[in-house]
Length: 329
Image (cartoon, rainbow, N blue to C red; front, side, top):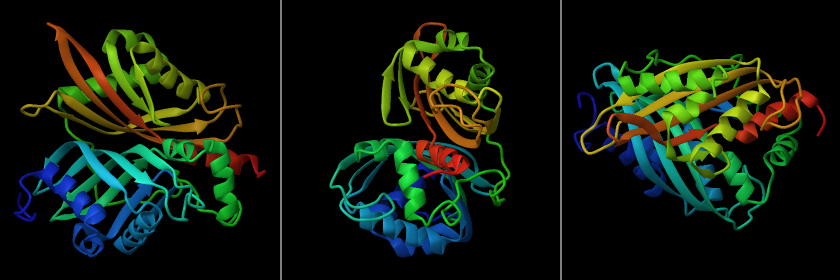
């Protein structure tokens, strides 16, 4: 790969390799090499710039979760080394909450949760990132409800005026990556499916998903068959029926010895004006950043279906927006 260290065989090896080196081998100093000095990092709960902040956040996380592992499940990517590459990296993480930190006083609770991260890399360094951690799963395993955690977080951060504000279009920052992915058929198929669902065409679920589909949704929720898929997507859309659904990035891939896969980064932006999975309508303006991965297959000849899906948004960041709108802790 032109511009990248020759110790990496390909782009997935780079993404999985530096993740292991940074987090599990404690290679914090390598962040000066692997993360660009002016990197823009967007998480649903915040937006920041600079690799110094990444280094500080990494050390703080490992102080709180010292035995954390990051198991790379997939890297769905597009681009070229010369122009830059965008990876959508899916991680299963295990950890024990052994230290005080951003999630409060140490609980000693063992955790399992996923992360989906879109990272743009060029010349051996990541310079643009969108990262979603399943904080709904994290706090539930600690004994919190996401809304109660958000309320407590606001108080610990100094109250509504002083607290760290969640990511919205108003405080987002423009980074160097301007790409939209690729035009592979699997990414397009996935984008068309999500667009149908967000346009209230719920018949798309039984027509496009396999009857035995396995789904992985926020809160560490694993589901099988159509019902969990319908409950998740309908519950989200019902909470924000007038909101605007936008696809920001789509990738499809056909790789040897792997099923066809796709990765979509999307958002839902608008009023919390409906009854659904986000609770009592608050009228808050919400920005929900999501990433979805899918695997496609043909169990019955000529009958291509979505067989496995992973979708994340940060429930705690959404609830933080709602609590801040209501103005009462």
